Amino acid sequence: MAYPQLMESLKTELLPFSGTGTPLQPEKTLSFAKPAKSAQDRILDKGLADATNLLVMDMDLCVRCGNCSLACHEIHGQARLTRRGIHLFRPKEVSHKLDQSLLAPSVCLHCKDPECMTACPTGAIARFQGGQVDINPTTCIGCGDCATQCPYNAISLVLRKDLRKPGAANAKPAPAKDAKAGAKGAPAPEPKSNVFELLGLAFDAKPTPVTGEEDLVAVKCNLCNGTSINPVDKNGVKLYKDHRYNCVESCPTGACIRVSPTEYFSEISNIKGAAFNKNAKATIRKGANKDTGKQITHVIGIIFTLLLCGLTMAGIVSYGLGTPLLSTNWFNFRWITGLVGLLGIVVVMAYPMRRQMWQKRSGSLRFWMLAHAYAGVIAGVLLLLHGGTSLGGYLTASLMISFDLVILTGLFGILIYWLGPRTLTQIEGEPLLIEDLRRRREELYQEIADITATCQTKAKEQNREAEFKTSFLKGRDVVLDTVTSLPYLLRQYLKRESIEQLLTATQKEFQGEANRI
Image 1 (cartoon, one colour):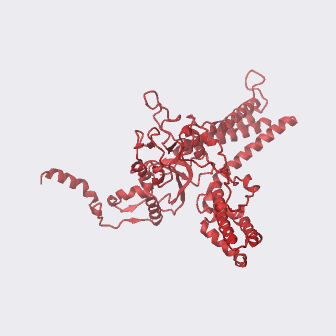
Image 2: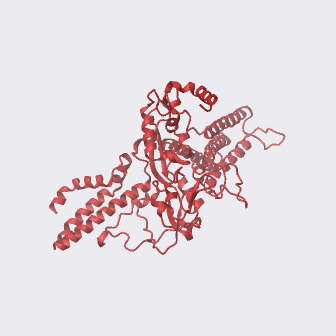
Image 3: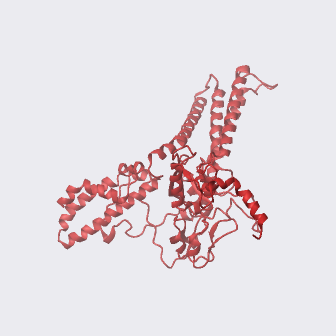
């Protein structure tokens, strides 16, 4: 042996782990809790373990506001984040069941071995200094090979003239000619527009088809590198040490987080070290998904609210509202409560202003949301104390009552923010959005239009056009009223069904009418 001392040193280091055998052939059978094993299989099957920077949404916190996607749109000019993707259930702790619902949206995972990079014929896709897999627009020819190779639908093609032009994506495209017509020129009924338009379920105008002559370029998430929230100087050096992501910064509840899969998902990280674990168990680390900053903000907010309101009430009891506190005759607790209440209103009104600051570093929106809530409670209590036992004139009374009603609605909104996502997570089969229902309605509508076109052609060949108009079209309208109605679509929240299942159920429901035709 060339290096006996080195071998002895290695044996000494590995001695504590000798009870479990070698890393590749452990003597003890590795045991995984069923919930952890189920989550592990799902994560590995979907390829999420290959990500280097993964965006996940905690569906128990997500209020489905769309701020993440809108923030991406505002910072890049085109949204590079789609709020649908891979749904995961995993245990928060080893003793738990699958009690954490996560969504990995359709956005770039910045894979360790990116397929898009190998598919690019010009080498426009590369891993840059910040660790992000990005596309160089100057060498991108817009062929779309990367988009077809990406298994996560994270790459899209846009017009080169619209690249990095904020607001360009807001323009509504002109509808294409005969966009609503079914295949083969079939007569297609116009969709209803009352309740659907009110809920945002009405049809959007179809975009004009892109021709081969137009100059396209591929775009994807670049982790907000080179944007206004991560600016660089003229030498390319970052102005801030910490790196921020606009989608995460703009989430009002902290549902969006950027993680490393092998660190956040303990059921994955333990695969590598399980053979060296004395207990040979794969466990879930406690507190892996806790938002420490949010918890600290809650503690500070609760203490400050109780302290300020408590001291104010104690002072009013001791001195009264109108008793002068200093040598002046005007400075008293009525003035103090009024001024502090006014300051609270200013803080409350700052939150909607922050929501419009998409392209500046203004602090995480979730902290502004908490400050908004606690400032509203403080302002409501102090202004209520400010009025005392006398409400004054009608104008003063109406202002105070209206503001306190606003505070109550705000508190109700906070309750909805807390209760709503958790309720939706329990009842929905998949994390559905309102646009998912609209898309499903469009798919159903197009299927029926294609069937109409086929039947019209056959009726014309068999000289049964009159029967087609009187019987088939009438039955088709009945089917349309059923499968495109709001209650029918809302069933998807309880149990997500495929188009084939929906059509099969409809065929059974109208089997008698179909046989007669």
